[in-house]
Length: 286
Image (cartoon, rainbow, N blue to C red; front, side, top):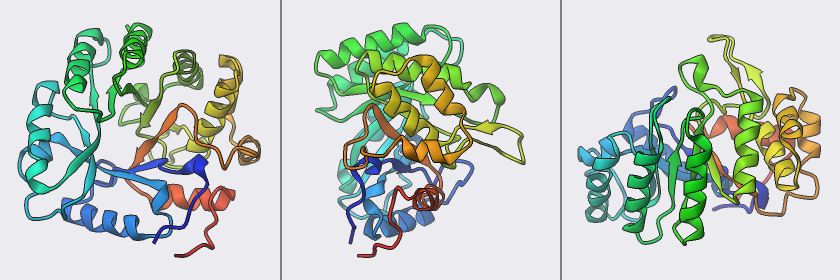
C-alpha cells in the first residue's frame, strides 16, 4: 500500500533494473518491480523499462501479470518498435510510454525524429520521448518536437546524462542549456544514465563525474522560475546538498515542472538519498 509522497518527487524514478550497470535478469526485475509497486514508496516509482528487443523476442511470455504497465525502450531501431508494441496486448501488458533514440552522435536527428512523430500519431495518446544527442541539430530537433507537441501530440525530449564513455556525460553548461531550451519551448524532458545519487560526485572506479538528480531537480526548478543558463549551470555544479534542499522549500507539494524523471537500475539508491535529504519521509509505512 502506497503512502502519499510529496508531489515534487512523485514518479521521479523509472525502474531500469534490466539495464546496465545493474543488468538484472528479467524474472528478477519483474519480481522486484512487483515489490516496488506494493511498497510504501510506490508513488516514487514509474514503470518498468524494458528493451523492445526483449519484448519482440517473446521473453515476457509466461512471466508477466496482466495489467503490467511498462516503458518500452527502442533498442532495435525505430522500424521495429511497432512489432514490439504489437506483442504487448496479448499479454495484457500496456506501454505507459515509449522512448527511442532518433540519431547517433553527429547525425542529423530530423529524419529519425520525423519517423518517431509519425509513430506517435498511431499510438492513441501514449507519451513518446525522443532521445536526442547533445550535438549537431539539437536545437532544430527541439523546435520540431515543440511544434509537434503544440499540435496535440504527446511527444517530448530525452537526453543522455551518462554512459560508458566520457563524452556521454554533458557538462553542467551543456545540460543547463538544454534545460533552459526546453523551458523556453514548454517542452517536458526525461534524462537517462548516470544519475545514481542526489548530489554531483565522482565515480571512484571510472573517474567520471556524475550529475546528481538533486542538482537537476534544483536546477530545473530554478529554470522554471526564469533563471538563466549560467545560474542553472551553477546549481548543476554544486556538491553541497544544503542549497539543493533549500531550493525545494515551498515546492514539495507542487508537481515537478518540465522534468518528467529518470531511469535508474536501482530504486533503493535514489530512495535512500531522498530520505537522507528529507525530501521523502522514510518513517512512513503502509
